[in-house]
Length: 201
Image (cartoon, rainbow, N blue to C red; front, side, top):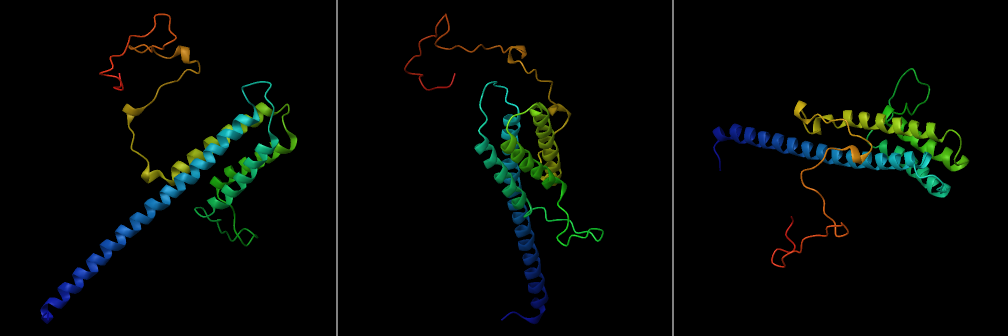
């Protein structure tokens, strides 16, 4: 048996070990939550991007699949409720509703639901371009709000990481030193030595 003089030391060691274990568990739970939140946010972003295109497609003459749009609406509705697992309603004594008020980030997801329902119900119309702009702006706001929530886990960037203006026409992008060569090019391609076949060039 340990002597009495060791009892305080053992108790302190056990306490320190318990605190360390608790801290590790807390960090693991936070990482898991951030991962699940990011996955949820990714689902919302993909839905908004698809809805934006459906509102005003670049390809003219394509028929709108209103059934598919309605599927987006109930998917968005489900994502609103799924989002409540991360963002519960805000309780306020100035509100009469007992369940509180929805958070800002979920407002954007609900807008996606309503935009999809509107498009499914009424189809294409004279305001299609405006609807696309609204959904585009909605997605931008959603991403900004999501970034605030996962801010501590975002990668650190500095002035050296600042991007440049990207032309919408790929033909205007900067030239690369090495040119792409395809089998259909007029000059053809150089034969590949079987000894090096499969090695990336």
